[in-house]
Image 1 (cartoon, rainbow, N blue to C red):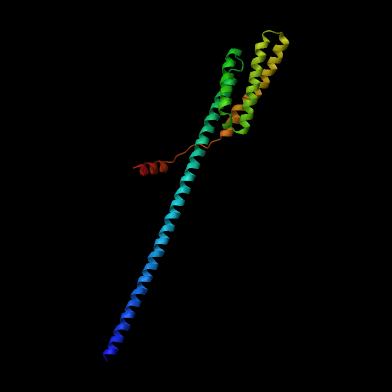
Image 2 (cartoon, rainbow, N blue to C red):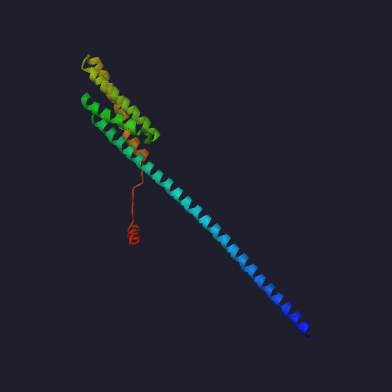
Amino acid sequence: MTLDWAVTIILLGFGALGLFIKIYIKSTIAESIRHQFEVERLKMWEEFEREIHTIDRKDKFKLAALDKRLAAHQRAYTLAIKMIQTLRDTPVQKDEIIKKCETFWEEQNLFLSNNVRRMFQESLIFYQLLEEREKNADKHETKIRNTLYDGIEAADDKLFNLPSAIQKAVDLEPIEITQNEVKKNILLSK
């Protein structure tokens, strides 16, 4: 009988040990799976944040480029208006405008849209030719003065179309903020 009790106790001990090992292994496996899941979740989160920062950076670059493009179109528009206003002025006044236009062209022509770039360049060339004709017109007879008048009309066509082309290239929608958006922005800033 003592042997039966001893065998029973040993069997119960092995059973308890087996149960303990089973629970231990199960909890270890569950912990390992949770750890692996957490590691993968953190990797995915870091990757997501990197992507968001990359997108934000790209958007900031695009916004900066659009801002630069808008500023270039605004400057081109201002120069186009000055060329139109000084179309019938003296060559000396035109020289100053030509220098400003050439400086602008060298520094910012790549920011202009293709159509505006082409039209601005053509208008500037006509404006320069007109200025050269005016300088030479004083030295020659009325025939040259008549061709000068024809040149003014051709330059008029080019120059007067330039501002509207610039406006079409920019073509921004008006900025409208509703009262609800203003309230929302005020509440978010608090």
